[in-house]
Length: 356
Image 1 (cartoon, rainbow, N blue to C red):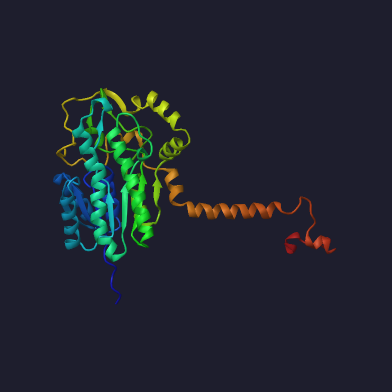
Image 2 (cartoon, rainbow, N blue to C red):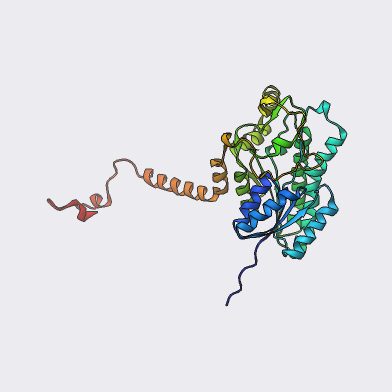
């Protein structure tokens, strides 16, 4: 009898809600055993139940990724209870919607500690285990904002820029060392997640993701794919492509465009509730799931992402089409058939189909 393949072991930070929660479900759908890392125990229990309903196994690990000791303890618990870690997904984040002039040093420190340092601590915990085994995959959940900063989110944009730079350095080191540990960064567009209902904000109106908006399942598909493939970066959605490439080509125009449109596009109707809870320092109670309040405005599909993940197939199809066109047009129009050149004529009255 052949032994069954052991279940894939995955760690996901920020697993309680939003993109992290959708990614938990995506890995659970293929039977993974998952370490669930976030601050909100109640929401993590909800995620654990969803994993088990899909046939997987989950370990609830309440932790603040800003604390390297808590991250290391979570990694150790996963390996003890679930087995060697195959995939580590860094996703946990916090943000502040605010003009720079109104930000405080404490807020910049906190966003950096979670959204950048949390990725570093998670990566180090994963590398301590993956490098000696010479296998494993680390996926950093990024953003178009890792390349193009926008107004009112300076702390978050800076943290994502830092993650991108950190990944470039680490990737070069892994290549130098001949390591088989894979590293990928998935750059996301605007996603419909609960964070816009609890992010700390000084905006006069309710914060929103910059349209067009995508559902978190779109991001989850890209993250799971990145864990399986050796792609250094995955761009999700045409808006991400536009933002990154546009900034490389015409950054000054992007500055001007965002100055005119970046404030309005991050807010929508209704005055902000100045007394609502935010999650900068403590999690907001309750299980908020994967989706935010923008379901009616969000799309669950991305043609760009499909094309990106299947570009090898598309390249092969394109090559086949090019070959067919070349074959069709290489012979001059009106050229004689080989039979005609040889003087072979179709017999009078013979059915044409017999000669084809």
